[in-house]
Length: 526
Image (tube, rainbow, N blue to C red):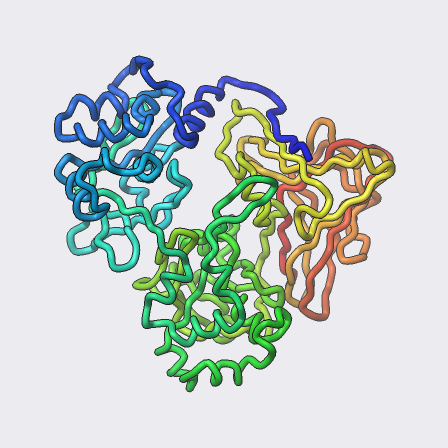
């Protein structure tokens, strides 16, 4: 199958894209070229002018990355170390006599691990999970020593952090932070980090019994023909927390949540899925609320319940409606190569009922979309619009049909619209011709009355559709207009007597054409 992923339009943003490709590809296409800075010296030349970074510069050149740091068309954040720190890492950490003895791929990965392309991250913004990945595809985790006021980058469990001893050295194309020791790429998986700790023996045994250990240990997965990092987030329960609840063994835990551990529908298996997410979520990500709200529902891998979150003046509680819990500040954002671990202060049982908090849900939040090369890429009004077509059955929970079948097109759409109106600059688009429909499965909602709000595309070539919410006519009037009008559509209120999953179905009416949904917002009605 030929995968169609291309730019709809071209723009002046191309140099920045080329620069990003330079850092993310294997070789430097700008090698041996000379670059000029307009106002200041670019990062590469600044480093080269200082003898204390001579080994760093040599390694950059060996990895074909040096000239990439001299481009003035994109912003970079570079963590660097001086010769003494480099020599210590090469000899005492990596175990080589010289960096020249390192495997080329290992050296290349190491240097990319120190570079964050796409933004100038100042020290004031270096806290918890950094907002962008490194050129190696990893996310760095930052912290601050309160006593010394020194910021650092976490190198993982049982490893000393890399302290930032000279910060915010601004260049024409980015910023440099000087470290007292080189970063150590984290190689341990989520599962390896969990099992290396003596804090989580009951929880780990339960995960293994349910067959989730292999998934937590897996680093990569192939989607759409691309090999991508398969990130996870785990809410871990310590033995001491279990013991406080009278749970001293795996059998005690199974007595509380019965069922076949390998049966994905059993309470025991769902209890453990409730402690996992199939995406990378740092503490900061878990506590970003929809605009105007201090409460929300987010979703784990469990299909039974959502996770309710409430901000009480900066003190964030999870599932406050029942057996509430918090994430321990001393054991959160524990990094692994393929995810994060957060320790919780309660057993985090499946609640008997969910609180009625606002739900903001994006169809493009599904794991499969993360494999797309331009997934959630930061865009401004001058950047090109990108689209990536998907085939029927490739993304669970998205189904469609058209007559004739060859007319159907469904794609991931990345574009800056209305001064950044699209959340994460992306939406799900479709064109089903004159006759067709598309269904989107959405997560479980609590019982009660809800209003459905759809943030839609309003594309110039947009169409019209009727809409059904869980089999009910959800329209205000006859059709939902995707051509013009407000940024979003509020639909009729619906009352549900129990917690359940739902389906939104859009059916093409008299005016075919492109249609798109950025996100749904479900608002509880008192």
